[in-house]
Length: 120
Image 1 (tube, rainbow, N blue to C red):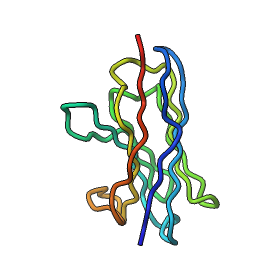
Image 2: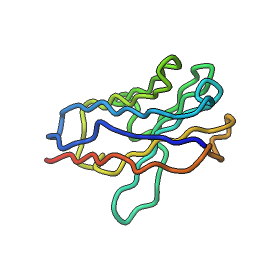
Image 3: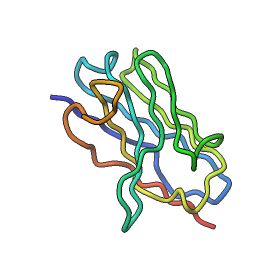
Image 4: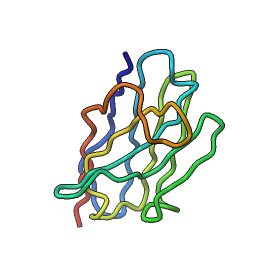
């Protein structure tokens, strides 16, 4: 069974930074594409960033140039460095492990997420 645990969220002022971490249990991490997602109140969950097993990275237009995704296969961990945060970045952030590069299916289930709140 695959489990993901997100951490690192918090309250920060606009313009500040946070670094989110996501640890994945099980033995699938090195062969999983990883994604960060977020869901704000009243909105659907949206893609923030993805990184493939080969290191190919994609970002949502709204975060490009401000956020950076990375992975450490030795630690089964994916990170999301968030800089120049804006109030509209406020959301619960989730990570997911994907079995292929379509990023449509996930291993296991969604985690609890970590709350990020950006004050103006």
